[in-house]
Image (cartoon, rainbow, N blue to C red; front, side, top):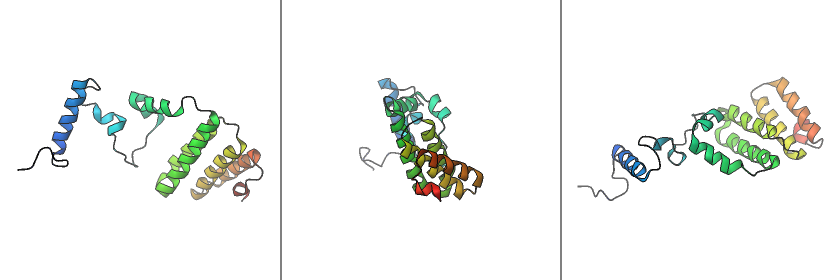
Length: 156
């Protein structure tokens, strides 16, 4: 017989029931709601997380607040540029639309750092070039050069 105290010996159903019991008796969440808590969310790159989904989940909203409250627009823009770059490297073509959203959100943060804004526009243009959205590529490159005329990436 398997030792019930050993990790990995418990069935998924038993583990789920145990988590439900602990969380509901401790008053954290109502029974059955734990799977929506950020700590227990499975990362599935095919599931699109939208701001509407974040707004509908008080736990995700709280985490978002911890990340962005007190940050300057420049810090937020830099964050979205970095995350967009990381996502582009991780997901490639499959993540292009999401990457564009990150770069756009960084631009919309309203930061005044010309280099960061220029790179956000240039990076967004690079992804749009991959998607063959040529008119938008030119528009973003022009905006990138308005923010920083020395941005070589935007000039090409």
